[in-house]
Amino acid sequence: MLKNITLSADQQLIELARDKAKKENSTLNAQFRAWLERYVSTDRKLIDYDALMDQLAYAQPGKKFYRDEMNER
Image (tube, rainbow, N blue to C red; front, side, top):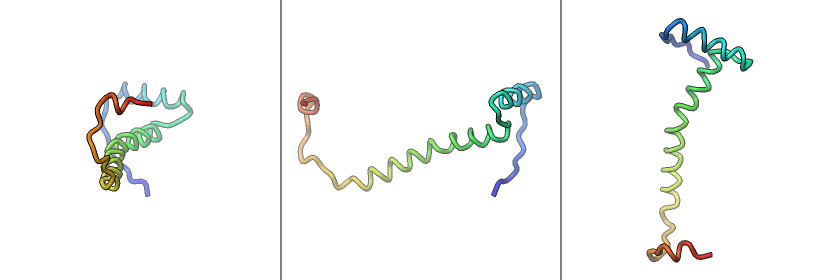
């Protein structure tokens, strides 16, 4: 379900943003929704990473690897 919100911005900035969105065959609403998704996805990625690290916590190398050992091929 989409929910309406109200934002305030300079009128000229809004017009420029609408023009840019139109050139990209989009709307200002669609661009804002895409931005909002990217904005919150950063936190989501961190949460996913932390959950993955928790799941893999059982895996221990058994020793400390030194730089030369880590770079061996």
